[in-house]
Image 1 (cartoon, one colour):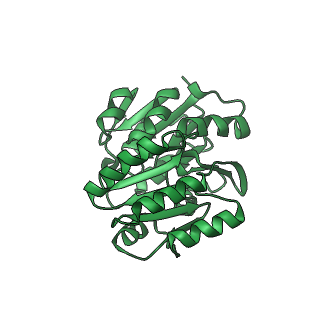
Image 2 (cartoon, rainbow, N blue to C red):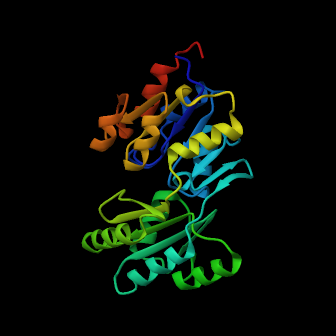
Amino acid sequence: MTYKLICSDIDGTLLNKDRELSKITISEVKRISPIPFILISSRMPKAMRHLQHELGNTTTPIIAYNGGLIINNDDIIQSTEINNLVLESIINKCNTTSIHISLYHADEWFVPAIDFWAKREISNTKVVPIIKSNTEVLKSWELEGIGAHKIMCMGEENEIEYLYKVLEKEHSNDIILYRSKSTYIEISHRAISKKTAIETLINHCYPNIDMHEVVAFGDNYNDVEMLKSVGLGIAVANANEAVLKIAKKVTETNKNDGVAMALSEIFKLSH
């Protein structure tokens, strides 16, 4: 089989233990060029562009926010935002808790304060947020007619568990919830996924490529649909059980350059 497009998740998949791109990963992605290597993540675009620069593929499209925002250079291919009524409901539910809410739209990230959770995300993503209360952001977005591409709720495990159950019960028709960690909930619009994002990207940018000609890498629940739908869905060995169960192939862990090893195996030196 000749594969013509590669899509890779970032955190837990592409990055090593230091949350960086290893030299061998950079080398392999550059070697297989001009096969497009697409970064597909729950991250914001700003937290992906420095990785693109290191990989030498700055003109390649980006799939951010699990498919909530698809960008080809400066052109927005698709933007799917969460309804502000849902955001208002989430803010109200968290008011009496210690849960931190991060709000994302395009290349803007808003936090109410630089607390423990904000500092952790700054360290992980190399992006600095704008300090603004959740209520102020909501009011501003309502006036501008825009919404969140992603909402991130972070806090103590018991509070996050309770919030997850309440949101799932009340807003399951509007949003999809991912537990990337026991202390995190990542919230996206119900209509989007990494699978639908790849389909949209192909339709707009690579019309001569079919889904069965795509290789995808992932490690977490939000990667399952994507890995099942492409020609070769590959899990890193550190992936959760749900991902390992459906993957067509399992490579080494992210800490042991699993993506680079798989690329070396699939795309021989003839490329």
